[in-house]
Amino acid sequence: MSDPTPRFTSTELLLVALGVIGLVGTWAQGFHYLGHGLVAGNVLFWKETVATPASTFLVVDILVLAAAVFVLMFAEGRRLGLGAGWLWGYCRLSVFVAVSFAVPVFLAHRQRRIRLSRPAEAARPSGSDWIAIGIAVVIMLVAAGYSVGHIPGAPAPS
Image 1 (cartoon, rainbow, N blue to C red):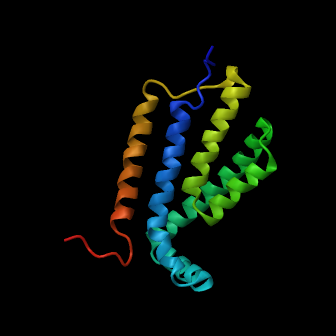
Image 2 (cartoon, rainbow, N blue to C red):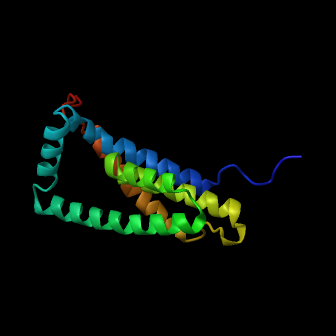
Image 3 (cartoon, one colour):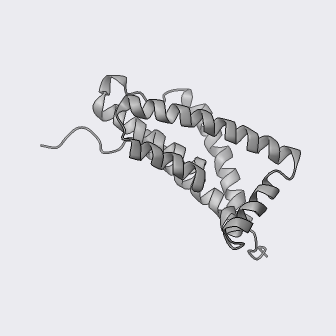
């Protein structure tokens, strides 16, 4: 007899997919800096990151959001019994790889843990929730597509 509990839900898979797209979209730009070396690449990255008022706005916005997410990540992770290794791993991935990769993967892990260990607490988006999610996903896909289409040093499309 088969187990009726699915291995992954559509919400968990969507979160992992968002993380993968975040990884591709950020690192389409990130590899450019690695070619300058660890220290010089970081210096160049941060100089360019805060080069304009708009980019500085986004840096502050994302870093404050990341700090708040870390608070949530550790609190939720402890509440759900996720090991410290997982939590610190997600934190390190956020800092050294991309917060847009690590946070969605953490959220998928969180969803799965709740679904498997606390089924009464499991919830999924429904109805009009998908309108907001759909709008956010379309905007994110446009941004990631732009990033992949504008890789520094890549030949311009003809």
